[in-house]
Image (cartoon, rainbow, N blue to C red; front, side):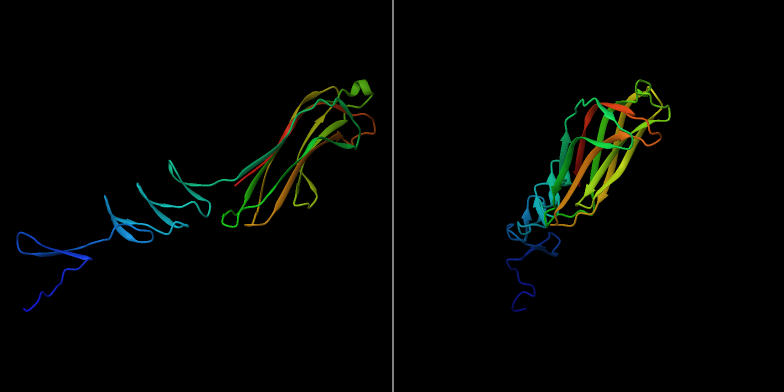
Length: 227
């Protein structure tokens, strides 16, 4: 033959084995952005630095876009978190029949997901604690009288809704209450949202006697969201 049937090139390396067989290996160029290339462990892959799959010293990983992050333990999701809290108080306030009074601050969280983050639901957690006493005998009340505590949420200005309630009945009793609620809602990318939480405490409407109790301490509340 005037010339070889297969010609060596910059992309193919030809070698002849000891038993006369011809072998061809792919010859890769050094790694550059957006290419295949050789590294110490074989074939490497790199992609454009603005996102997608990224080659690292330990293998392929996803870059910090779309809510994903390369951490020391591997691939993790980047979570958002915010919290608002109210300090406790000792109002020692009378609780009047059928009249609910707000204690503590109105807690507010507002924000939005960045346009490149993916989340179907944002989990919101509201909690409030306090201590009350009926002490109705001192007020001339009846054993059926009661005091109530309400945990309320307001999402995007849609109005206050009671999500948890605690009641203490019978005369001359005291104790703590803890209101707690988990609330999931959709937060589309790039849209602003506001959620609020508050505590209302008042006398129940079982009888007409007043006052129906005392709120001695309001231990404070927490409003948080995470995704």
